[in-house]
Every structure is written in C-alpha cells, then in structure tokens.
Image (cartoon, rainbow, N blue to C red; front, side, top):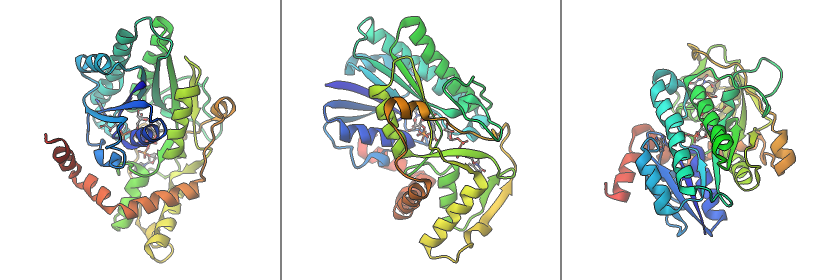
Length: 349
Ligand code: NAD
Ligand code: DAU
C-alpha cells in the first residue's frame, strides 16, 4: 500500500484532491495533514471521512519536529503539498504568516522527506502544487509557459515563488524526486468566500454590494476545481521528475465581465428580474500591486499527459452556483465561524 500525505486537504482545492484520491485509489492510505486555519474546514470532507483508506491529522507544517515524526510514523512515500496561506489580500496585510507557512513549511516538508527517504528514492515522489502568480503579470497579449521567468509581485506570490525555488533546489542538490505544477485561478464548490467568485455569490444572494477592484479590467484564466484535481492526479502519477507543468482553463475573463455573467446566472436561479443583481456592482479602491493579466499556456500537460479541462466555464459556473444555493448551511457556517464547532464535536477537543 502507498502511504500518501496530502497537506492542506481541508481547504478548497485540497478537499477536491483528497476526495478524488480516496475514491479512486482504495489501495493508497491517504493522510490529510491540515492546521485548520480559517480556510480549512472538515465539513468539506464529510462524504469521505469514514472511508478506511483515509485519516485526518491536525497539525502545522511550520512545526518541523511534528512533520518529521509524521513521516517516520506513517512511513510516507508520496507527498502532494497544497497547504498554504492562499489569499493575496491577506498577504498584503500580514506577509510574515505567508513566509512561515508557504516557505518555512515547505522547507520543513522537504527536509522531512529527505531525512525519511534517504537514498531509497525509487518509488518516492514530492509534488508541490503552485500558482501561475509566480510568473508575474502579462500585458494584453501572450501566455505563461513553463519557461517564463519568475517575477512575483505580491507577498503571496513571492512566497510561492520562493517555495518553488526550494523544491527545485532539493531536486538539483539532493536528487529529491520532485514535480511542480503552476495553475491558474480555480473556482467551484467549497471555495472560501473571501475570493472573488464565492464572495460575489454570497453577496448577490444577500443583496450586498459586489466590490470590484479598480476598473475591473483585470484578467484571470479560470479553471473548474474538479478539473484541477484530475490534473493533479495526472501530474502525480505521470509527470516527469524534476519537471514543471502549467495548468489552466483556456478561459480568460475580465473581472467585470465575469461578475456580470455571474449576476445573470444568479438572477435566473433566484427568479430575479434580468439585470437586477448587476445593480449591486460597486467599484472600490484597487488592490496594491494588482497584476493586470494571467493566462496559462497549458499545451505541455495536454501534449504529454493528455489532460484538458472537461467542462466549459458556463457549465462549471452553473454547477458552482447551484452548489452554493443548495448548501446554505456551509456558507452560513464559514461566514459565521461555526465550522470550528463541528471540528470540536467530531474530535472532542
Ligand atoms: P485554501 O486557503 O482554501 O486552503 C489552504 C489549506 O491549507 C487550508 O485547509 C488550511 O487550513 C491549510 N493550512 C494553512 N496553513 C497551514 C499550516 N501551516 N499547516 C498545515 N495546514 C495549513 O487554499 P486553496 O485555494 O485550496 O489552495 C491550495 C493550494 O493551491 C495552495 O498552495 C495555493 O497556493 C495553490 N493554488 C491555488 C489556486 C486557487 O485558485 N485557489 C490556484 C493555483 C494554485
Ligand atoms: O492565479 C492563481 C491564484 O488565484 C491563486 O494562486 C490564489 O491562491 C487565488 O487566491 C487566486 O488569486 P487572485 O488574487 O487572482 O484571486 P481573487 O479571487 O482574490 O481575485 C480574483 C480577481 O478579482 C483579482 O483580479 C482581484 C479581483 N477582486 C478580488 C476580490 C476578492 C476584486 O475585484 N474584488 C474582490 O473583492
């Protein structure tokens, strides 16, 4: 049996990855290591928490002794590392926490893997899940490829760029079997409502203003999270060691157009008059250092691993909005902090 450590599995993307691996690979033992910060929520995994090949472990990747012991105790031979502070605006307010988790936490995991694996590397793999933000900002044309130079602008992207460099350095210096992917903006169910799409879904539902930074012309490339989880499966199992894979949705939207589309989808679902929710759009002060445009060239993963997104943006957005409207309780809990109570009851802490 493979012993696989997934970090950050109680978060947005991590929960989709854990679900996919637990359901697809009954012969893997999946350990989900998560600190349960404000962004981690065990309700995200209720459907799989009782499966025999799954175990949740509460812990902090900033704590080296804890992480090192975990590798020995559970005899970890594969890592999919997603745990991170992930929100750009929070990184602007509190950069140090991003250094501690994203940089120091990643190096702790690398050291633990290196200690535990020694020279016995034949069936081992350390996979770092990273972001397209490390490449900086594009103008109106062009795409990020795997060869684009790193040029991060926010404390968040600087911390992810730094952790990518450490992962590559451990490959080049110690021969650690690593693989990295850099993905564009994800959307889908269980997305914390501090990020643009779930924040707007929450506010449209409650008739609250939809805050658009600057002129709203900033552009992102959106990928349905279930497709990202499938790409992570492909990279983990088929990616070439030492390589990087860019993952994207072939799906660029200016923020203002995306929010207008979301308003239309929500108006239809909520039985509101067409155009009603667009009246909530409010332009607010811009994010400092705001990157104009991200766009991924995902041709390498398509060519080498046969991966492509499976749903259109309209299909993915429809599924996402339906999920949020059908899961009122989830949204209420995460916006009120009540999900902590679930954890306490479940684990008697
Ligand atoms: P998220 O914020 O929803 O989840 C992060 C998870 O990590 C949470 O469950 C949190 O409790 C956990 N965590 C945070 N600090 C920890 C620590 N010190 N120790 C252990 N666990 C800790 O993030 P997400 O959006 O799901 O992103 C997951 C990963 O994917 C991140 O590495 C992020 O950089 C990357 N990524 C995200 C996107 C996106 O659009 N969301 C796109 C590309 C890459
Ligand atoms: O590109 C991948 C990255 O995508 C991930 O690495 C990050 O973890 C993830 O948070 C996301 O970063 P962004 O900054 O692009 O996502 P966010 O949802 O915060 O913002 C998307 C765009 O919408 C961005 O241009 C800023 C803008 N925005 C965001 C918020 C929260 C607004 O206009 N108003 C808002 O209130």
